[in-house]
Length: 402
Image (cartoon, rainbow, N blue to C red):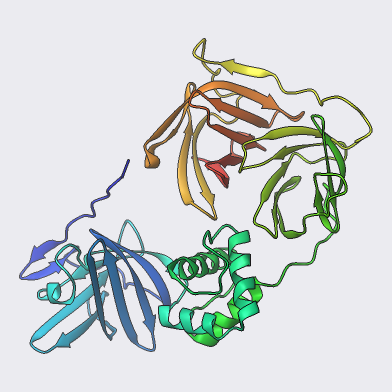
């Protein structure tokens, strides 16, 4: 299902496009780069050295405009470009939906194709970037470094192409995604100059040193024995450990582990004696005991609902996952989930997943496994009614109740 959002159309006033008759406050957009959303495309707005430039693209349509940025007496910002007899001016005004409205004046269709428009919204700050700088910075790395960068991008889940040292569209997109994720963590990242691109990429290829984690040791996970040590993860006896690429602690006792080959695990509700092992790739979830010498399986959780026989009881200490949630992940960004009494609803994806079973897992009463009638699964950890971690669609989401 494709969800199409139509932006409000600017009002034509005296031959000029305007969204408000007057501005009540002076619009402030600092130097930097911003993502934009147009009716028919998306774009990138860059403000630097007193200049502004906007590039947009959509299906079968591209456009660009650049010029000196000036502040108008009504508090708006604007910039203009003239090419021959054609001229276009864009006005940036206060917005209730983003950082600023983008309102094009007369003649702007000369600067873009027929199937998209400059009219839209400045959405959020993003990484300054130039495709030519990304290409140049990547190609200036030696052959080994280019392969290591692609391997690091693949391990972090941003790149799915071949490890070939070639900067194709997949590599460029993965570099941008990795830079956006770094900026979201608070890092200062720029991809608009080749030497800045090189510095960022060389940092990606450095494997972080491994430190002692709470889950290190040997575990009995429902009959299988897994060992986590300083050298890596060992799930088959006499096989060399698989080294770690990254260990991330989402919340106390809840870890995401990424290995050098891109394989990922979630280790949740980790205590000195027990934890929950989860593989997003396979959907397997095991309850583990730290004492690997104890034979047999760790007791599983209780089924708290079975459908279509009934419904999950109203939200309570036993069902802290019920309700609407605002969730974010590095891979999919912001997604709204609603855990209703009979199904999980993801409206933006057009998905409603009816429950087959809802199973309580672990000993804290904060972890649950959702088995759906179509065979899919999802897992919730550290649910307390206001926050939780969610494994779904092969990604890890940090969620806050609406």
